[in-house]
Image (cartoon, rainbow over all chains, first blue to last red; front, side, top):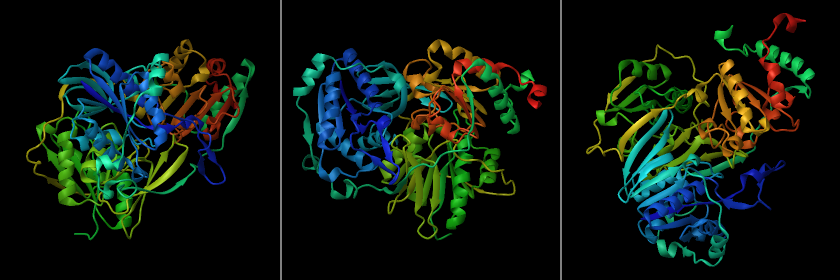
Length: 272
Length: 334
């Protein structure tokens, strides 16, 4: 069984700061990490490999530096890594990203299963997984929260819907996107880290993929960022302190009166 | 015929077959855009059967036309057959704009189709505007973990597709005087089979979190997993759903289905009460449009207080008992 796991290197959004004067992101000194939601996909792939035997390949599109993310996947136990990197890929939106990833996956060899994280924590779109399925012509189950059964020919998963969870059996090859409930990511082992340092990473450029310019990078992207701005927040906040039990009682009373004025009761209808 | 392309929405159906509330949210978004542009609003329904009541609801919600693909094979959402229906519309009707809700199904179908028809697609929009001259859709969404807002446009590709964050749109009073034409379309031939075999469906024990009027949310500041219980009891006693921050879920104190925020659910309840919630930007993105926000946290500098209407600086566990005392109105009046 061949399993492909598209991953992305992202800035650690927990440490992203904004330059208040310009409203732009301060990127200096921001650590790059593997998209945290991809770790669940990696873990699931490793578990499937352990059960079914086969090989796992992490695939990323990004600048040369994205190699670091691939090495982290290798350190967790992923077998192979492929980096699609080319100046012409820069500025890609989700359409163009999915296009390059699809071609890179094909170039490396058709997988039986593609496992994606549900979304990347920087772009937050969740669009690349389903778009990748469309480009690869694969059946897709998105927002998978548990894998019930997997064999060489099919995979049975439960996936999230607004009103419940649906279990479906997909024939393989297929693509799934997974949410964090699906697995608990393992930590890289020392030997894994050692192996990752020297492992070969297959570098793929558009010389290999031969996609037309019109489908690459900014030029190939249907969407454009027109502007960015800092979300404006802030309401008038009524403040009370309740450091002690004595202070808590009047603070709670004020709160309830405040809510009462807004037509909200802190009690269920039944108990009134 | 109007000279301009129309604005389409996907009127999603629930697993039980009814119209999803998001259909009305999308109509509420589309109607003013169409009025500004001078175009029409069309609602796409893909289902096993669409009845007159559903048509009336969509008309009253702002649709000028309701386009239906109807077949027993379209009973449940599946990407392959639903995408084929939507692609038929894109090809035959050349929509200027196509809106879907950013539900699990919408966030699966829209990118799949956008890839195939080479449309521009913007995820999880919270604000929309239109250039009345060019029909260019200005799509605003949070990015980088909610740290910035980005306005996206699609200069040339059509349709301009966007998914709209559920629960981010107030639904206006239905206008029952509005009438809409219904057009039942021929199915794509052949209609692709669903990509998988549907084995079973388990309804959520409570979809209540997203639709709840009141939500009590616990953050890491409640201290330890054993402390969840009193807050869960409190939530129940006031008829509120229980939510959690990402940190609480990551620690395994509550399941993912409770998670509020960018990587969880977006909620817009009448009342949000956060206990020990510091207000990480990714959490705020999922709850900041709640009508009234109450926060209890020990750190007076916690970001949650910047979006709160009523803030209490104190320990959530210590404060909870005070809240459980019923409001004595005589005492409050003193």
